[in-house]
Length: 320
Length: 315
Image 1 (cartoon, chains in turn red, brown):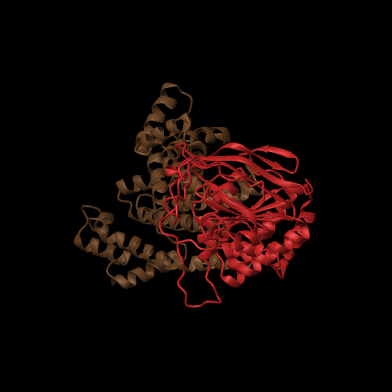
Image 2 (spheres, each protein chain N blue to C red):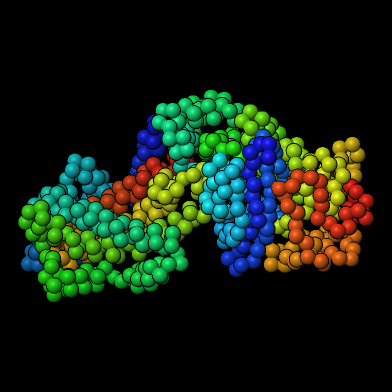
């Protein structure tokens, strides 16, 4: 393996009642690489990130899996593997309201570097500049509620970077922002990826956003990766009916006035997960064998593949 | 930011003014609510009408209500709360001699309730499925319904009289004696206040533990006592401190009962004696002090919350 990488293998997350939300999910991202994970809410993409951090959502727990950070093996479920940090979706609720930005950053730096408070504070200022904040001295003294949405999300990214991560897990970091801010935050993440050689895992329901930042895209449906591959090929010639529908749902600026496409129905609840293809109920052209047990794709392999048995028989780029 | 803390305190004090005015009116109006004619009460049962009229004029009771209220406020402003009907001792002096006992009880009671409620809340919030939490939950359900006079009597009977471990009446001399004498009374207040505190603290702590920002804090490596001190406690405390402010009245009432039970020479015991003897100026003065106490207590709770939670500072 050329670059060092973050590898998650066989991740299994279950609810308190024992219902699996993720069964046997694996993915890999190399340093300096960006892996995008797309899927609608309930597909398990956020849960996958939280579980990787060892902080599964309330009411769920990590039952199996391993996390490899470089050549260090961490059992899945151990809290915050060193070298991995996470940016959360809603910076309004994810930053401690009682903490000044400067103290929060400096304490985090001090914890991870063993630095003195003075050194940690100067590193904190540097982090704020890195995420594009002007007047870092002023921002250091601010509480989260005194910052605008865009600045807060930058602060949240600075906080994640304060742990000197090699890999950054981003859970819909731009969803709560307007389009202009979205573009700025994406540019910022891309710049950090380039400058620091960060490996990014970027989760979003928005395939357009993911396509702007990711080198490799994994499409998740009902707890499984159903299609994976280099971003251009997945967007250009999706093979799985679900991925095709997602791509087709993208508004086309060249043909204004056309109706937005939507996929009929809703994704299954984890308690209704079956061993076979989980998309077949909503699929435009189910065929024979769709009930056969499927393993789900191994996301550590980035070659373009889909999980659909009939991927060769339906026309690319158009779902019903 | 630091300057706005003082501005906030100033604004809160301004908000208190109307409440203060209302308190003065109510305390003044107590006169009218008390059965019987104060002039006749002072002059005695065998006084003639003329003597009663004389006393009435002496007290200024023949003036209009507004004039009397104005002169009452005027005397208050000069630090004059009148004199006791029984002893002619100034009411301010009576209060001065006894306020220390009541303040000690309040402070001790608060400390006791925090010491009792704190660990209980921690177990309830952080180990909700444990056996200890189950037991604590049951104990709280019972304790929340125990009247403080009964708790006081039980403590006095069992710990004080049967076991003879601690004094149950009056203040023993010396610092050690004082501390020993305050132990059971403060524990009584603590036991009656802590169930509310424990429940409230456990609820807000549970919310904070499940919050997004605590997940974030853990994701950047905060754990153990650091996580607790820096992220959990500061966020969980404000609702409990606010509740404590609301409990100010109950707390003061608690001291009245406890002082009576344990024969402590505080404001509450004096209030009961004065009321029984129809010593009106003392009752009026003490009512004013208790009212002021509740106002100050709430003000302190407000300030404490704004120190803990920066979001309330700009509001």
